[in-house]
Length: 229
Image 1 (tube, rainbow, N blue to C red):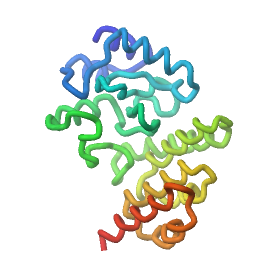
Image 2 (cartoon, rainbow, N blue to C red):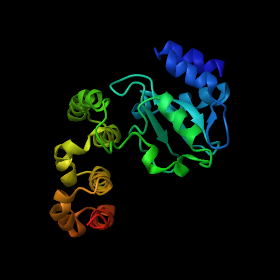
Image 3 (cartoon, one colour):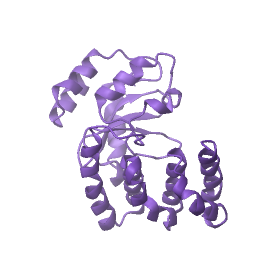
Image 4 (cartoon, helix red, strand yellow):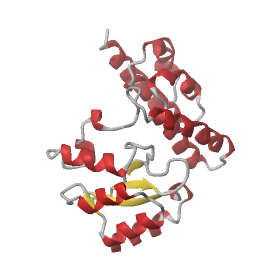
């Protein structure tokens, strides 16, 4: 644990984050990463520019990692890096929120077992921290507009969508027509997640016009929205 405390201290994390790590008891599915694995994974991350802002803090010992943003606009936020599908959008606002959620869900034995309602992102409702998130989004959009690396562009778009609160969903409408199939699919899923009724006409169109998995995603999104009616 000492290596994690030293590392987080060096990157400027505050006392509450350090205390949360110090008081946490690892368990199956959510183990604090040991020093050797930390060095191995950060060495791997160093080979890919899209991982430049994150470091691993936990593992499920199945090659999946809970990571925290150590730098950049998303500093302090927590994401999950799966070996099956790379998706680096934030899921928790902080290490403290992550650990509190793990402790409050003792029957969850891996990341996918955590109830969807326990995640901070995608934002489901306005909370005081939403104002801080709104300040981050323009920074991410600026990075997206300047970025030339396709993988980083996809992950940046994912982050923008995750941080966008329900009252600003219209801001991410353009992603529904994005040329990148992964960005388009994620946008469709986000509108389904929020059960956003104004998007129904567009989603019906995308059932036949979206790229690849986007068509199936549109069908699922419509089902979620219709379940509210």
